[in-house]
Image 1 (spheres, helix red, strand yellow):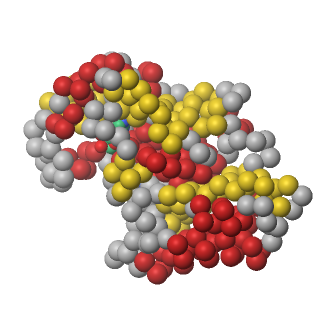
Image 2: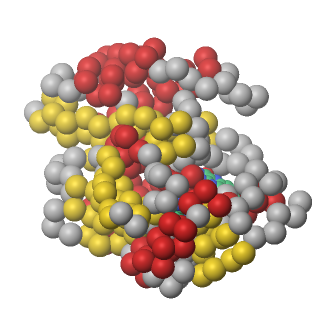
Length: 284
Ligand SMILES: Cc1cc2nc3c(=O)[nH]c(=O)nc-3n(C[C@H](O)[C@H](O)[C@H](O)COP(=O)(O)OP(=O)(O)OC[C@H]3O[C@@H](n4cnc5c(N)ncnc54)[C@H](O)[C@@H]3O)c2cc1C
């Protein structure tokens, strides 16, 4: 299909992008990789009057591994996250997850910011930023603010972003050196998106789960923290029985989506098995 007519501007800076958005927030769409937006326009699910191309905005690119935190520009592509050795050394979960996203063509163009702002309920990065307790930096003409990843995903394709706000960067507190993370997903066979995906972080102290952090995607209308499982397991012996019980409790507490590919019961079962497998993997 052919999109409705629109005007197109390339923003040269963050300030310019924000200014263009401010003038008509509801009639303007930012385009990053375009991997979701362009099909949406072609299907006429959106018909903005203006497209603001932000790919040239240098302030929104790159990965900075600092002593206390890791900053990732919203325009960083999946391929750049996969390739970064500096990031891999502190958070190997990024390479692991990026490798599971679609194919090289999609990874070369799709951006982490576009994925988070789009909030597809089956996208991978939302589970990871939740498990990593990231903060998302957003900016508008009235200034900038940070939103905890836990609070960012509101509903299907819906986030805490206001129509005049740009997602600028993702900030991740540097985890303790002995905190290990993993990501795993059951892929939809056609799209590669997560039917259910789980990011899990674990720190063990003399056989006890000292710190547990879980993000789940694909299961419900939006990615969410696996707090029920984390709360149950924290402070307990890291036995297979405790891990399985934590996963069972989380599954029972989750209201799962149902669609033509996976029923709510099947997704609930995947929440249980994928949390179990992810925790066993980081515990190993
Ligand atoms: C064939 C295919 C397979 C895929 N498989 C997977 C997969 O397995 N797992 C997965 O997680 N994803 C998958 N994706 C999604 C893809 O990886 C991108 O993450 C996704 O398309 C959005 O990123 P983008 O940069 O292309 O965003 P765009 O399409 O440019 O934008 C998406 C939306 O976000 C808004 N937006 C973009 N950037 C910003 C910003 N900085 N601030 C505010 N709003 C912004 C846009 O206005 C638009 O509404 C797949 C996509 C395709 C086409």
